[in-house]
Length: 310
Image 1 (cartoon, helix red, strand yellow):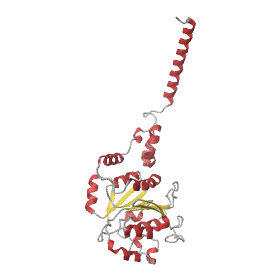
Image 2 (cartoon, rainbow, N blue to C red):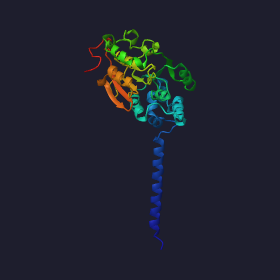
Image 3 (cartoon, rainbow, N blue to C red):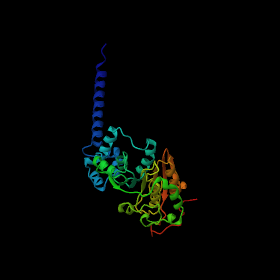
């Protein structure tokens, strides 16, 4: 049975009206939706961590609507490919790495000092993308090997004159007043202070320090006694006025991480010279300390602070 002609006419007009409204809405949405060719807002939002950490020149390009700012840096691409195709895993576990990564997420781009050069070095460098990451390594041949693979990493050869079997004696030495005086390690008379590091290490105000070297698993190895002590002294002597205080940890602290605290030296020396009260967290074999500056930011004078809080 056929419907009346008036009903058919009304339905046809209604269909046409719906189609017109639909096309109008589509036109409005297309005119207001940013595309990758004329407005990078959407891409910038998705890649905001990279843009935030980029250099000033990259930020300028982004502000000029340059599509290149939405690309990940070549060094990050290389890191992703390297770790995706490598059968060698970093020295630290995922949970241990996550502790440091969270701090770097807040602080980067920053100044990041790492004692040790290893399979995880490319990762640390990229987690501090846009900042300066320096690696200190005892094995000169290993530095050359890594440089051939990752020439973008900044590393320096350092030597240590201590041995693991000196640890007990050095612990006693560290209790003396000359080792509790906060000053530039280059000019310290404390036997634990490392005085032969590259000048750039002493002249840079470090935001984050990782102690994962030198070798310390046998008696004749250098051990990390001096590295731990020097990291703590650099943190106390740090009065970086440019350090931000927009994170969860406070802008006047230096974050110090010590790996392999399951070993006697790393355990005892980190607690003695980085201080138990400054420890934020332990995850597996990694300890995280936040050490406040012992210097006034305005006149650079020493504050009335104990070496370790009681």
